[in-house]
Image (cartoon, rainbow, N blue to C red; front, side, top):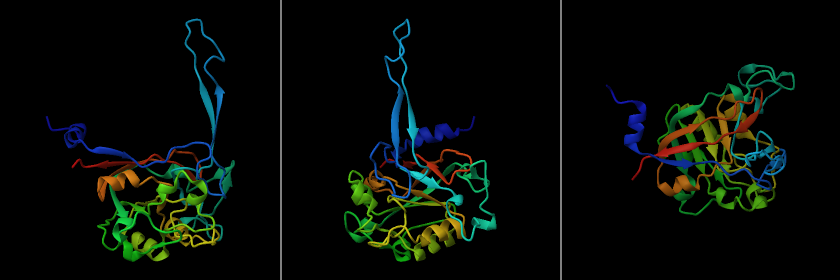
Amino acid sequence: MSPSLLDALAAARPRVVDLAQPLRDGMPCSPTHPGFHLALARRHGDVARPDGMTGAHELLVLGGHVGTHMDALSHVAVDGRFHGGAPAVVENGRYRSHGIDEVAPLVCRGVLVDVPARRGVARLAPGEPVTAEDLADSDIREGDVVLIRTGWAQLWEDANAYVGGESGVPGLTADGAEQLAAAGVAAVGADTIALEHIPAGAGLARLPVHRILLHKHGINLIEVLNLEPLAETGAREFVFVGAPLPVVGATGAPIRPLALVEQR
C-alpha cells in the first residue's frame, strides 16, 4: 500500500505557525469599518439543568474587514464594475458576484518577504514604502501566497499606533504590486491594516495597490496578519493553509491562516 498524504505529513512533522491576530474588543480596526464586539447571550447559571450541566454562548458583531481577514474581489469597484467587468449589483442586501464565498480554500506554497530583516531593522518606520526592489531577492512563483512582513504586528497592543492615522503605515507600493501580479501569485498578505503603503497624513483616500491587485488582476488580499512568529522560525518558504469564512456576497471575511514550516 502506497503512503498516504497523512503518512507523508506525519513523517515531515512540520511546525504549525498561526498567522492570525486574536479577536477581542478594543483591538485595532480601520476607522472606516465597524469594530469587533462580543456579548454573552447566555452565561453558565442562567439556565440550570437537573444534572448540574450548564451551557453558555455569545453574540459576535464585527465587520468583514476586521482582524485577520481576506478581501474579496467585490471589495473594490471602478466606475461601478468589478474585476473582469462585472457590474457591482446588489441583490437581497449583498453583492451578486465576486463575494468572498467564491474564494477557494488555499493550500499552496507560501513565501515570506521579511523586509525588516532585509534592511537590518526590527520593523519598518511609519509610512515607509515596500517596493519592487524589496521583492527582487525572493523566489516568488506562480500560484504562491506572498506574505510581506513590515514588523508592524509589534504594535498590535497599541491600537492608535497600529492604525497609524497620523504617522502613516509601511506597506507595498504600486510597482511592487505589479511585480507580484506579473509573477501570477494567488494572494498577497501583510501585517498591516491595509497592506499597502500609507504615507503620513494621507489616510485611506487613495489605495492604488487595492485597485491593482483586486480590480485589475483579480488577486485577493489578506490583511492584519501576525507574521512575527513566522519570521522567528527563519523560514522563507512554507506550506500556506487558509480559507476565509464563506459569507455569501460579502466583500471580506475573517480568515485564520496557517504556515506549515519544516522543522530544523
